[in-house]
Image (cartoon, rainbow, N blue to C red):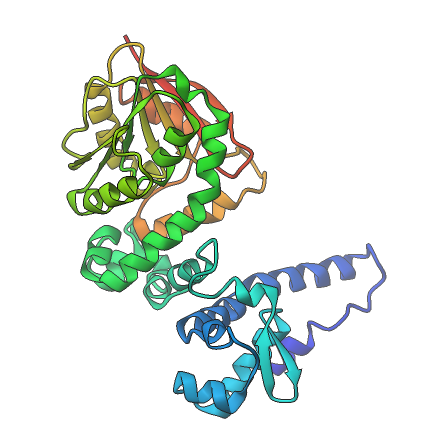
Length: 356
């Protein structure tokens, strides 16, 4: 290991020489694989609630070790690493406080970064990635291999992880909801069905941004219960009905606009087609289907969704798709892709209409 790390020192070859390009490539690859180190360090900080413990000010390593039930010498190594990452600052020898970045990792901080870290870098997803080669060879999710359960069955069986996952998703998609509401004329509809809409973050945002559309939030019965409370808290019960059900069986019919936001990427093409066909059976002629998801660019263009696609493979068994792949999926389900609308975020709106 020491020899490999020593090789990462500053290159001595002339700029633009073959030797320099080789050295640069080596360093880039090293940086890619070493990303697991800060990821697990930040996860440990979140799991141990270190930013919460430091909310009132800096503490010594011994004090933090006492609060987190950790071995002080080992914990100091973590604290030192977190300080080098900009999450903590060593205010005096062996005493650590929070930075602005560290404050964002507190439990109640806006954006739910702690929940995201606990989900993405947590042990259960780590185990799923441990079976990534199995996913590549079989098409089966690594989580199914490691736990014997698909994602949503796993979360249902682990309430703490489910609560963290739900909070993380709200944090991730919070900014997206506002961007979607501003990027599309939802006032053109009398009724909007958010299929698989969770606790209603997107639909609440749309209803607040419009004058008259009525909303229907459709999700599993246990999620629907939470959604009702969420809409009541926002004073939107007069404009939204919450309905429990399973989109693999049916969806509410006869409405003007159907939204599938962050739904299809959780599922294989066959499963996504089943969901879309149920939407096709429900949607009247002249209505619109809106898919809110990342739309991957073709070719070598960089896009975070291309790596997210690997996460979907490892954890959910689902797929991130290109516009061409969405068009094929929609065509097989009785829809025509009309256009793809950017939102200024990593998510786009794929608009489709039912085929005659």
